[in-house]
Amino acid sequence: MKLYCLSGHPTLPCNVLKFKSTTIMLDCGLDMTSTLNFLPLPLVQSPRLSKLPGWVLKDGSTFLDKELKECSGHVFVDSVPEFCLPETELLDLSTVDVILISNYHCMMALPYITEYTGFTGTVYATEPTVQIGRLLMEELVNSIERVPKAQSASMWKNKEVQRLLPAPLKDAVEVSMWRKCYTMPEVNAALSKIQMVGYSQKIELFGAVQVTPLSSGYALGSSNWIIQSHYEKVSYVSGSSLLTTHPQPMDQASLKNSDVLILTGLTQIPTANPDGMVGEFCSNLAMTVRNGGNVLVPCYPSGVIYDLLECLYQYIDSAGLSNVPFYFISPVANSSLEFSQIFAEWLCHNKQTKVYLPEPPFPHAELIQTNKLKHYPSIHGDFSNDFKQPCVVFTGHPSLRFGDVVHFMELWGKSSLNTVIFTEPDFSYLDALAPYQPLAMKCVYCPIDTRLNFIQVSKLLKEVQPLHVVCPEQYTQPPPTQSHRTDLMIDCQPPPMSYRRAEVLTLPYKRRYEKIEIMPELPPKPPQPPASKKRKRVSDDVPECKPLKPLLSGSIPVDQFVQTLEKHGFSDVKVEDTAKGHIVLLQEAETLIQIEEDSTHIICDNDEPLRVKLRDLVLKFLQKF
Image 1 (cartoon, rainbow, N blue to C red):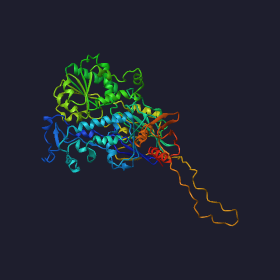
Image 2: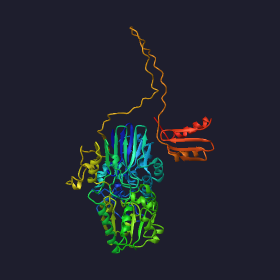
Image 3: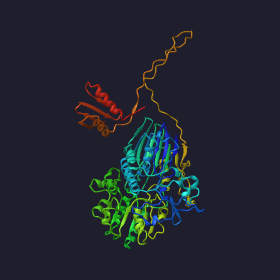
Image 4: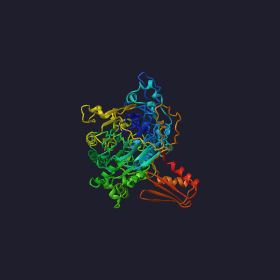
């Protein structure tokens, strides 16, 4: 059992597990912190950015002044932002059988994996993860493509040149693997490879391994995964939360009795209390607006924004903010707000019960109805007509390098009345602000991260008691800036095994048992020699073996099967549910197809070609081994 670590970012993991002759990729997170090394992409021409001086080496050399610009003592790449991809050389990614996605933040590198590595397998994720992940990718592509850059910079990536650059460019890791953003056709191609699953649904992989998603409590549709054979169990815990927010609560009981528990995606701000941060957010927002200033909230179009809008809904009237407009600007703003209201079965119990009253589970529906919250695809068009100040604007991207947020930073940055409030913990707010310096507007850091902290992890590990814990090396030592805080690390017995980017771990668990099935078609025993005192040679003829029938595994998704039938000319298809499964009725052909959990029967009268054709269509949905 081996684990290949392809990402160095503990909350944006990408690992590959080799287990029981299957190769399973666990998440494919995209490290976007690399974008902080680039200049912002303004939606309108920025005189300030265009006048930044080129960077000159200490010896006076100017050969990089077209690629690198200097701003307030920091050096930035003047090019389209690029992203740090997971490792692609550590193993042949075309051999990956399946990819398991834990949440929509951990699938942003999916198009790079599925479209450029020869990957031919299947991706498994829940429906909210797929749909919201699509929105995040669409916003990312839209934000970058609508501000085309004439030039691309590559000379600075030369290793000999990079050594001469100031930090952080000098210390940037794997710059040769940084890539520009993918395109929407690549996004659509990647998403077409995803098979949607539900919580506790068991998925067979080649008859060797079974994988099951469990609610992780972090985001809509977020999952932990159980990977098990008959005698071994591996749990993959990524991006989990025990706090009561909008998603379904975390399923802890199913993690018990794990031989190996792979733990990643813990909180990035272990010393910050999410409830306290929300309180600070609301008070700073109210103070700014009362003083006549505007508030800018750089955010993703899904996730924490739902909880922030809910808190503001309860806070607006008591704080005297009922006349202040709230704007949510994103190319996917409308879809995001609608999706949050329709994924009822993925919400916590309190929000599920509202759906049956019927009431919208999230209060932002009422904010929209009363015109307190307005959403727009961009700053152009209707927004420019409706725009009133003072106001509160939620928009992306949290890195401040692209998206509508760049326009507001340029527009409001010169006034000390305005405030930018950082709530997303993925980026250093000081690094995000660097290309906007000198900056007059106030900056407030209220990172809200509901993922597990180290106290909660210790309690969880005591309850589920795995034999071995595997985690990123960042979790096995105190943070570099707080080396005395030994409580900010994983403490368990035996000590956890740690990994880092581009490392291969041989996991300590060894198989003790194996389940095999002996087929009745095995060759018969050789004939026994007749009883005699004299020895006789047993016949050297090899007994004839019957050819073994291939075994089949998997399940038949009825909706997709019906679509396939219609594509092959079968019209008037009806489906009936039964206690054991489904009956697909082909009325014109007078044929029944019974689909049950462990068998499928095709019933037709004296039409062998039709039966064979239907059998072949059924086999397309099953795996042979």
